[in-house]
Image: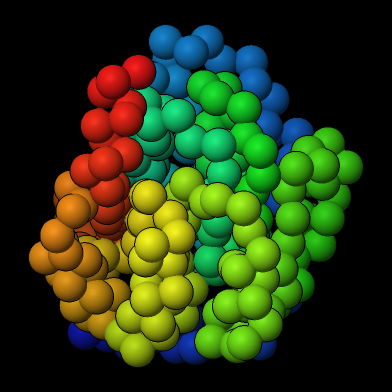
Amino acid sequence: MGYTESAWRRQQRSWAALSALHPASIDLGRTALIRGADVESLSDPHRLASLIVQLGLNDEALDEFPAELHAHCGQGLRIWQYPLQFARYLARLSTLRIRSYLEIGIRHGGSLVATVEYLSRFHPLDFAIGVDVIDCPSIAAYRDDRPEIAFWCTSTQSGDFAARLDRLEGLDLVLIDSHHVEHQCRRELELLLGRASLIAFHDVANIGCPGVRTVWEEVRRLPGYECFEYVDQYPGLGPFMGIGLAVTRERLRQVDAG
């Protein structure tokens, strides 16, 4: 059965309530699953998708997830991604020699942790930064093991955020996954254009996030970028989530040149 209007209303109420909630703790011990996996398995999107399920998924807006994944929701890293989309996205990133990462909108921190652990298996990270308007205690705990991680508790619409970006020395990849409205996504894009050679958006295919899709379509029309989409869906749901990745053609030429 497809996505009903009543389910859409429940999702909207769920998202509206998120700003009043504190992030849940995540099980950082699950990082051992990535650290212990062989690189061949991590490079295979099918095997990687199965690993992401084992890492643990988020249980907010549970209507987004198929019933067969519910047993893995609300535990582990609480990753708020579709495994079949996230796996293909990460596999692409593994080929791009990423040294720095910024994630805007981290919720419980699970997607940030999973991305950092995954990228680190292919290339050392100089730094990774999570950004959210709500504090995320799990990232403070993660820093005990990963001192290259930082957390900025700030609004992307503030002068403080822009000033922090100005102090960064280079930035490879940014994932924009914050407040899913058009004007905020566009403002974040404007701040990151020219700073990051890889810009990703989450929820580019989500039925409840038309503003994100609008901005992503604008990115696809920008000159100098090659764009990729990871929008595979589970039967009878959505469409939900979806990741768009824009990579500068210059960056792709550098990677191809070795």
